[in-house]
Image 1 (cartoon, helix red, strand yellow):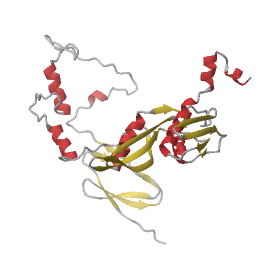
Image 2: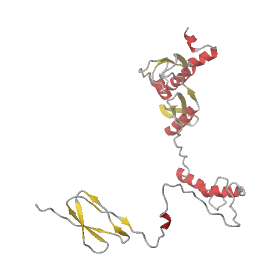
Image 3: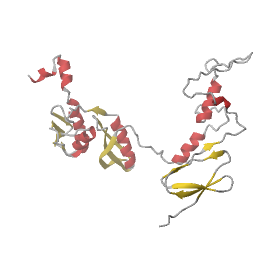
Image 4: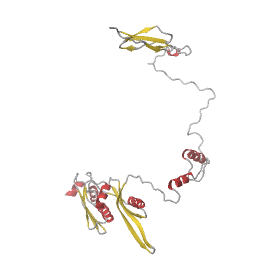
Length: 304
């Protein structure tokens, strides 16, 4: 059976004088033009070595007696006569206020001082503000990113009777919290619903309270509170119970991060009064360690 043969031609640079290749099937060299190397497969393995031929233009005699394993010490050249080293950064003359202001303006643009040292337009920020908001329209307020989440409890239409008729407004009740023990209730009124929600969210952030909780995300003890005609009852619960409450009481507890608790609304269904009664009930709670510190006894003595 005749063995199939194939011829491979390899181009070799003029700076190379030998070539080395290894493969499972053998190759043989065939005559070829200059800078060409022809290989033919044969039985067995073969090795073809590739070595670079040093150029006559480059002096490599420095590396002949150099051992890479030896430690080579670096000896910098001596400075010439009359050489004066430049001053360091800290030794230079101090910059003036105008130079500092010019450098700041070059990096960040003109400041609000009303003076431009580089000839820039000092009213560029005002033009950008007008372009974003529009002439004559209310300014667009971006959502505050402070780690608090917002939950709208109630939005109602309210009217005010004046001499010329009735004024229609919207009242929004919003609860904000970080679900880590902080919660607040706010209320706001405006001609539009979005503005009312924004105002109530700002009002809620001004009335943040801390909710005492145990390691099981529940209350340390039971509590009750009144706000107007609304009465709220709060009870701690075992792990896995969840928040068993309704109305605004449930929203306040969820935004505070309470995971196991019992709540009951008594006396009124007013969402705002129940939410504020929940806040009052939470403020009445105290941690066991606080009571022990005030009484000057260890915590184990509280249950005796």
